[in-house]
Image 1: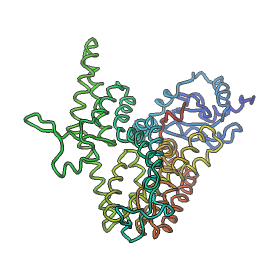
Image 2 (image 1 turned 90 degrees about the vertical axis):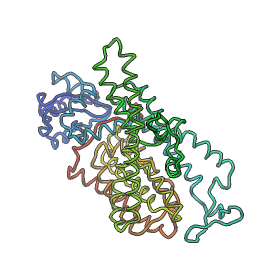
Image 3 (image 1 turned 120 degrees about the vertical axis):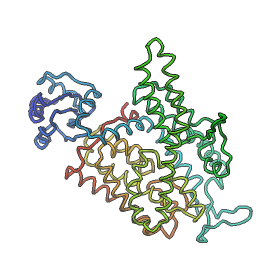
Image 4 (image 1 turned 60 degrees about the vertical axis):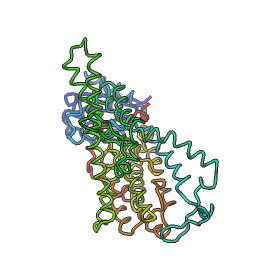
Length: 502
């Protein structure tokens, strides 16, 4: 067993002494400190201590990487102080004084989405696999024929059969897999409203019920709302003096988040003002019913309007005179859209572009953005490869992102540490610029990562590989450079993905 006596004393001195520590704890491989004055920590000399493998600051916490023997190191460190061990939540709370307002907002969003990540991982992989089965044509399977007519693309090239076109078995598998995929994505508002109440410390079952009211079978499915609104066939609640559209919010994020926050606010408000002996009856009623009413009269329509506004902006950007600039902006900002869930609106735009033009110029930028996130994680993994705790998150995260599911990469790594996220945004922006300038076009929506080239049209293939190279190399270089220059390295967020912390 290693003797950490001298190293622990040196760390205490170099960190600014006991008087500079608000709270401290440790996790599997790291010491975590909430320091009164982070500037007093002598980082250079701390990292020169033999048993210390590195340091970093995240969300106001100063973290010292020790390794698997961190518990022994902590015991030796604690002998030299009168400070008792705090819980991770205590250290987190103590370090919030060092966070900026935008870090607090982003942490709130992240902690709402983080518990949902395991389900989104499964759903993303299922959708990617289904895209291969039903959306990718293979020349080896022959040209597609419908009612005796050979199908061709807008440019005259043949439309090849997909796997489901020629295999009854895989067609059945494809239909069956829609069962869990629909549960995950169409009913996503239920998970969001539950997670909001969980985060805000209110009654979670009320959050689940509120979410169910947003996706009830009684309501018009959100995916059919546009057509129903156009032809005037939307079902309505008729109250005599007013009528309300009965529209669901399947796969919608902002309406669910607004509704969940409102429900939690109502519950906290009424718990303060309703006598305790009546709270069991009145508080749930007075919190849930107004939240449901507001969700379908104000919050839902506002969230829908924001998403629709973004969709129209994206469509204009793709077809307008500034599409080259738009390519950079969309490439850079697509990842933040994923955080809010507004990226789901791109599916409708892709579908319309494919129907109108025989291909979509939007989807290639989405694939490139996913690749950029994965590449930033690769760079971060390289810098922290000696930290076993980090590797348990970074390795599966970049593999998943390279296959088109970026949430683990973003919430597990890039967004938590911020500077890799910014590096990925810049790399994705440059790749998006290249994509729009060269008019890279995909035949359909595919697997949004490295396998994305399978759906790229032949004339765009070379430029897509060039853009892909940029999306890989630039985030890696920038992530390493930002770390070396200490750019945004102290701007990280502190939250957990439960699946990664069992």
